[in-house]
Length: 205
Image (cartoon, rainbow, N blue to C red; front, side, top):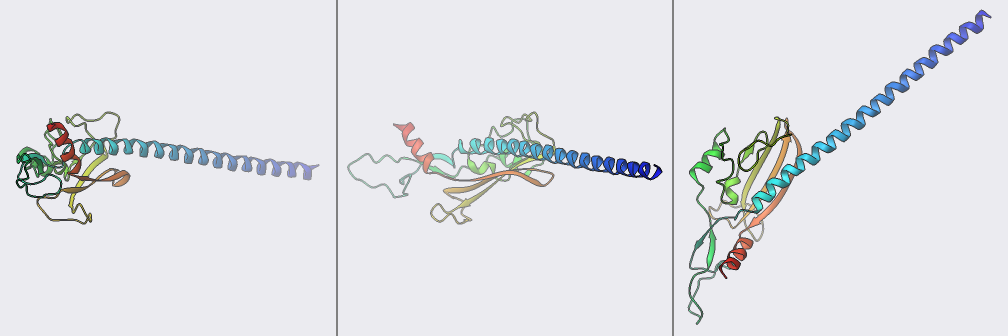
């Protein structure tokens, strides 16, 4: 009788240990699932920030529109052909506004934010922490540790290799969002002045 009682006690202890182990495993699984779900939401939110900046950069011209005596797309000098010799509008690099340059090199973000950005290269080395709207207002709902950065590199439009030219007609643009140095989302695009020239000609008609 005593022996049976001892076995029952041992069985009870083992059963409790098994139940406790199963409970820990279940809680661990729930915690991992919650972390995975939170991470997925975080990445989706970060990608939204990236796409927002990409759309903004895509909406500004590669360079400021001026008048020049060359073809806007092919760069061919205009000669007398019996047609109008008035020079079409072409895209030339806009001088970076001194206020914009101070934003790029400075450590503070002004109240007007990116409202004075007039061309793609104005966004070069732009960093904001936390993310902000174009008018400089902080975006609600984003952690203070989140950092949105833009890099802009002039490239050759034909082979897409980097160029040190002060008058590039194409740019490689990368936008990324990080948190504590951890990359959450990024996207790269190539901007050329071709579309700017087309839209400019459409507006002149």
